[in-house]
Image (cartoon, rainbow, N blue to C red; front, side, top):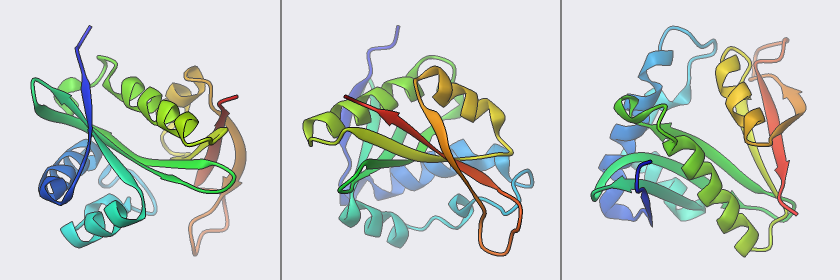
Amino acid sequence: MLEIMFRDADERDIPTIVAITQAAFREYEGVLDPPSSVRDETPAKVRAKLQEGVTVLALLNEDAIGAVYFSPHSAYTYMGRLAVLPAWRGQGVGAALVAHVEARARSLGSGRVRLGVRIALPHLRAMYERLGYRVVEERSHAGYSAPTYVMMEKDLL
């Protein structure tokens, strides 16, 4: 089992966050309709996210191998942009990042974590279901009449 450490990202980590996120989502280029907004991720967009919430880096021997964003809201904590470098997938990094966000949400008094998953990526939905998340709503991206993603939640209490 990997000994993963976690650290909240700051401004100096913006290039690392962009690189991890783009590397992790690269396999979905040409697969998702509409395309993932990750392809348009810029340092300015990551900086804005850092001001709205928290991005956590997963570190192995001080090297960043994954990242996740979360933002507390009144009724839930939103989690998004979970990204693990392809070389480190299948080793529990993603699950460890999810567990870290859940622990942080509990410490903030949040009783629920919420996230969105593309319908076109059933393996990701299945991963979150294994971690205790359930579908609570289907949604469509702007300009689409059929659902393109689901919102999933996990009660923490």
